[in-house]
Picture 1 (cartoon, rainbow, N blue to C red):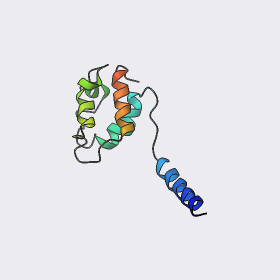
Picture 2: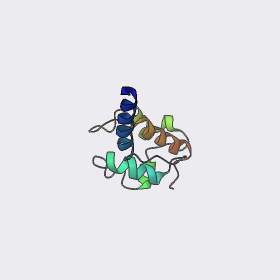
Picture 3: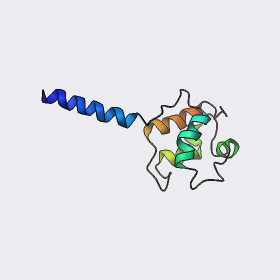
Picture 4: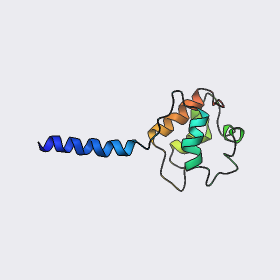
Length: 105
């Protein structure tokens, strides 16, 4: 009975916490990354750098996430400087978007 109660409590807590998370499409898109990562986590400090798609794409090497400043700085935890590190899911979204050509989609 205690185990059942614990599972119900865990499910209730897990369900409410994950309700706010919007899963990235696969492959990730610029629109999703901009709305879910850049705007809430980067734009406060990087208004000019990430103002438009063209300015953001200047920080990446399409098809090569490992050589892209956006991916390297977030993966290392150096950015965002004044906030929590990106989650694995957010990093994976950035990586897949860049690997897929960093398209304006």
